[in-house]
Picture 1 (cartoon, helix red, strand yellow):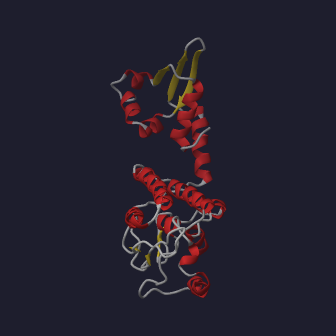
Picture 2 (cartoon, rainbow, N blue to C red; picture 1 turned 30 degrees about the horizontal axis):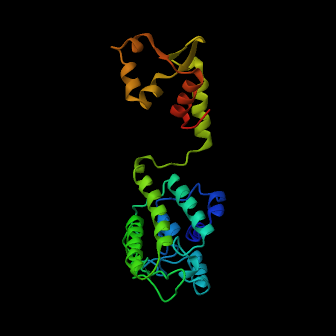
Picture 3 (cartoon, helix red, strand yellow; picture 1 turned 90 degrees about the vertical axis):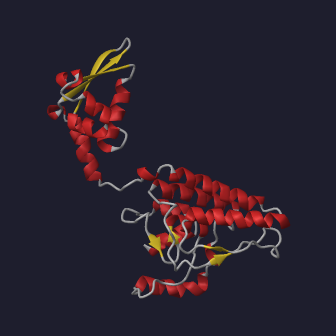
Length: 271
């Protein structure tokens, strides 16, 4: 999976989206790239391997590439051209949708210390930023801090704006940390779709009462409804009318909306 890490660090959005990532751990760390979020935002962060680690053929191939690539050859969200920045931000959003976590700590081997040059004056540069044992959010904030300090000697607003856009994305991910995605076999989804379609085993009827359209009946399974919602679990308890009748009346809601809700409950997908 080294090629996928390389693509992440190079901001290759199209490659990553089309690659087979079914076995890729989006919460993993790499000794040279840190977390997935580090890789997308900052490229390659070190050349050292973990102490005492056994190096396989993949690592040998990587070592042969070091002299050609170098740390700077990967670029990062501050150094990339405008199209590259756009791709990295899209890739950052995509990676977090797959479960990548901006709060994962980069290993000690990500020991690069990086400063950034001014876009128009190579003699102007920021102080250095260290990445080892820091999460990507901290690294982005550190980068913004040193760029802001350099504002006294030039206009660095373009780099500040790039960092702010990345911070905006990772802050949204921070608010959704409990909802990371997971890969599910298509056969499992087909099985649950079959359960939803099997009215013969259903033990609950959802009575959809639309104004002027008559009543529609949708069959469901109480075990699934109870597990999906504590409100439905309470409604289907023995002491409630819905539990006794095994019927739930829904008003001011379309039949199509109920079908969508049930599909999400059973398969986490749309019908």
